[in-house]
Each structure stands twice: as C-alpha cells, then as structure tokens.
Length: 460
Image (tube, rainbow, N blue to C red; front, side, top):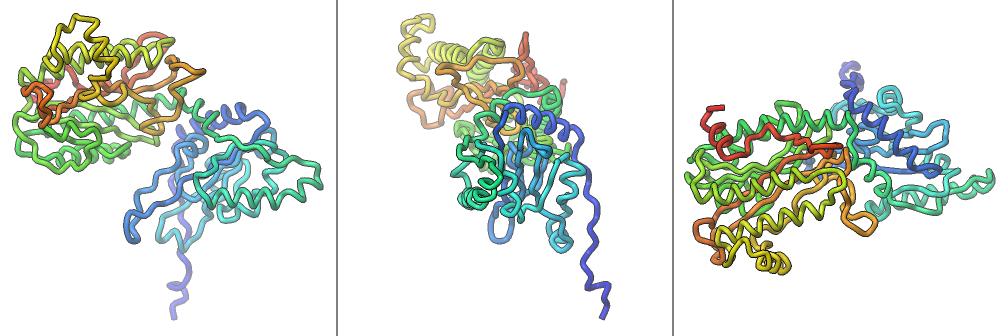
C-alpha cells in the first residue's frame, strides 16, 4: 500500500484579499462601531444555494458582511462589540484539507485574523460554543430576526446558556433587539472615496461592454449573442453581472425585466439593454436603447428623444437639498407633456390643466409604470430609505442613484399611436450627488441619437 497516496492533501496558500476592499471594510467597521455606541451587532453571511441537483449557484456574499469585513466566503458571521478589547470577531469556515480538494482553499480562522484584521476568530461550526460568553455585557443586540429560523434558534440558545454565568458575573445580556439595517444601511448609503473609486471602475467596464454590444448588434443576430458580449466583457475584466442582463429586441423591450434573451434581432426594431458590471462587490446599472440596424427611424427618434430629454433634465436636478419626489414629479410631467405632444393623449401639450389631470389620474402609468431610479452600491437596489422624517428625502453628497425614465408601448396596445407600437425605450445612468454639479459615472456610454448612430457605424 502506498501511504503517501492515502495521506490528506496539503493546504496551499490562497490569494490575499484585495487591499482596497480591506481598507473600505476597516473604515466602514469603524463608522458602524461608533454608531453602535454601547450596543453589539451580530450579522450572518449568506449561505450556498442549490441551482439543481448537486450543482450550486455561484456564491455571492451578503452585502452587509462584505461592507464590514470584505469576507467573501460562505459560512461566516460577524460579531461587533464596541468597548471590548476584541471588538471585531469573525466566525468562519475552518481550514480542512479534504474539503478544500472539492471546494477550494479557505482563509480559515488564522486568515481571518492575519489577513482580514479580526481581533478574534473562531470556527463557524463552534459559534454556539463561543457566542454565550461573547454576548455578555451588552443589553442591546443589532440582529435581524425572522430571516433564518436556525440562526434565530442558535441566538436564543446562546442567550439562554449565558444567563447563569452572566448573572454570577453581574453582567447584562441582550434583552432588546434592533435590525442592523437601521444604522448600517444609513452608513452604506453614503459612499466613501474608496468606494467611489471601485464604482467608477465598475462603470468603466460597463461602458466598455455596452460599447462592444452596440457594435456587435446587427439584423439576423440574436439577443443571446449580445448578452454573451456583455457578460463576457464583465468576466474578462475581473467582474461579473451585477444582476441578470436584460437584452430585449422589439416588443420584448416593453417587458421591464425581460431576461429570456433568446429571440432574433430584427431589422427596424429597437434593442433595449440593461446591464451592469459588479466589480469587487460594487455594481453599475446602465440601460441603453439602440436601433438594431444602427439607424433610428423618425418615429423611433421622436419617442427616444422624449425619454432622453427627460433623463438629462432629471440628472441636472440631482443636487443637495432637492428631494427624490421633486425630481420624479418633474420627470413625470415632462413625459406626460411629451405623450400629449406625440398623440398618446388628445389635447394641447401646453394645456397645464390637461397635463395636471392626466398626472393626477396616473394616465401616464400605462406607458411609464416604474420609478425614476434607486440607490446604487453593493446592491443594484442598494441600501437606504427614500422617505425620512415623514417626507421625501433630499439628496446629499456621497449618495449614488440611478436615473432611468422609460416608455413602453406593447405591440398590441390599441390605445397608443400605431407608429410607436412595439417600442420599449429606457435610458439609465449612474449619478453621484456632489456638493455641486452631479457626476454621471456612466457618461462615457453613448446615448444621444447622433452619438449612438456614429458609434454603431464605427465613426467614433
């Protein structure tokens, strides 16, 4: 018998985590620890999910865990304990030679401390052993109940186990619980300079992908080919899709979250593409609409220009002190006036009473049924509230939002002018709120009619 062959494999080294992400996490952790005051916080990472059979989906970490630790592997938890000699505790999957043959190398408990800056680290499967001692001394715990029943039971068991020793030591135990999102998601809403560097890099890869997709579009092709160009570019540049790429030609573009991406590209149709690269956890989110044959018809150009004018006007309003509702209301008015002008409604587009009535009755929702945008960051619909102190929240420097008006006219919509039927148009950019003019992170992607046509023709 060959004893060497029977021995467990050696544990090799793993590539170190990205230094920039570690710094982002350290800064975020410091802000969160300060915000917690005398409270503690327990946040679990994401778990693996089966796709089918024994095949798993590609793992993606819980965004709160990424933000606070940069830890990207499953089976983990973060415990933050302000005022403790060891405020940052990580529970992670321990190194195991046999498992690593199948699943890849782990950082392990040692790596959690040496590479990720944990003050203390323990094996994840030993969390029930260590948690009772670590929770003592804290009356309030920031923990999200009702998300995972097993974790809820684990926490309840840890508190029950700690009652007697805590009482003997004269220490408090958590008896009040707060969702971590209340503090943490407010912090995530405001991007640090390092976070913005990553988001600009994600926007640059997204711009490259959209540009290549435009030039790859031609009658006779297929939506899936455009998806392959986009997603392949993301992967080549070290990223991945931040969400399932949408590639809808013709009437498919009137379906807001169309992801089948399997139909032919037809001469004379428009193609609506919604795709953003996720890079180091942060995602871009961009939509562009372009003609399959590279040239807008007069009718396509008329509807497209209305959406573009609305988008550019909305972006210009993204400034400190302006509320989301103010920008959205202005966009709805501009779209509604345009719909009257283009014959979707009878009347004079300059008749403010008519436009007011159409808006009040939400008649525009037949063709524009979604919101104007959303926060952007670690999640494509990122953390942060839109209503604050009972009213619409004003923009503040450091926020990143999408601006994405659209019009969608199904092929069978007999209430719409026939010349616009089968058109779905959305234009979306990622916008940073600054102290002055907004910064459009995705400005490099062509969107004006002449720029789109020139790019598709290879003239720019």
